[in-house]
Image (tube, rainbow, N blue to C red):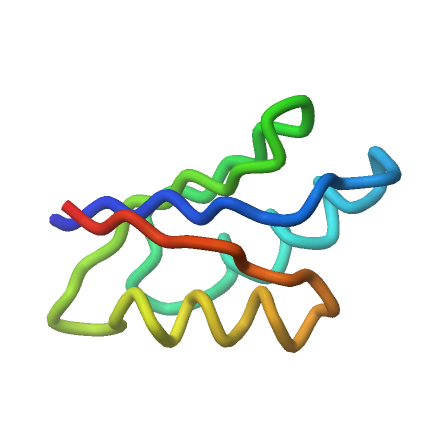
Length: 73
């Protein structure tokens, strides 16, 4: 199981949380995805044999959010 934290540009609305979490949590291989609104971060836990961190980053970008950095462990 791998973990990734994505630093986003400041989030402007609480509905952003639901939008990002809904998409990521429905993704095959993602165990958990939590948006930390005040920190503008997305914390994920996923199975790297099914999905890679860069794929998650691309999904966040497709939703319209700029990813400033990513830490994978």
